[in-house]
Length: 286
Image 1 (cartoon, rainbow, N blue to C red):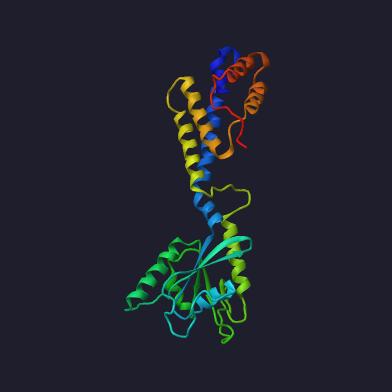
Image 2 (image 1 turned 90 degrees about the vertical axis):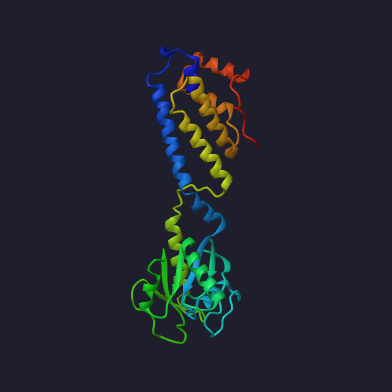
């Protein structure tokens, strides 16, 4: 349409054409900004959602990670504070890639190594998508008030029937698997809330850079300038997005032009394209 405004006089064009073009540009800017704002989620879908395993020492964190991993990835002993570094395990949960991170038991300690482990645990909880918090006592929830998106768990139900009765808390055993399916189902539900099927997500940094370039070029069209420069901004935006989806097909451009204007007027654009006066309109890369 903007090519048409360059080639034809105002009286030959539909009324409000420029206004409609600007509205289309603004709509595209808003759509792309929405996609770029959710880029972190797209990366999570590709690289895995992060679930941190938190709690005091000896609350069953490492046993849980070993059970869902179906192998011993974490050391389990009766001595508190065994885990002092972050231990990761990638698992497919309901079709989603999930990275479970076993962390050091959170408590005050004079041991330098353990203190570093606790600091890493707290930092991991801040950057995770979900936090599974292991408790021995409901009163301990106050220690984790600032933890985002928590799932509260009491483990060791195979040796004690004193589980949490409050709604929203889960009782499990990493010895016999009691209650663990409920935990995993809850993880899936929390992920699904973040990832509705109808949305589109960016999963790579290169994609984000390309779309930000598209936004920049489309935003430039709002500046006061000639129609030729206006068209150039759109062409640059098209070139940027072509790096993701392939070049713009000449036939598609012509279909749009011929459908909006009559054939006689459109023939001018047809000639301009094929003698090379309109650059960078090439067929998609194979």
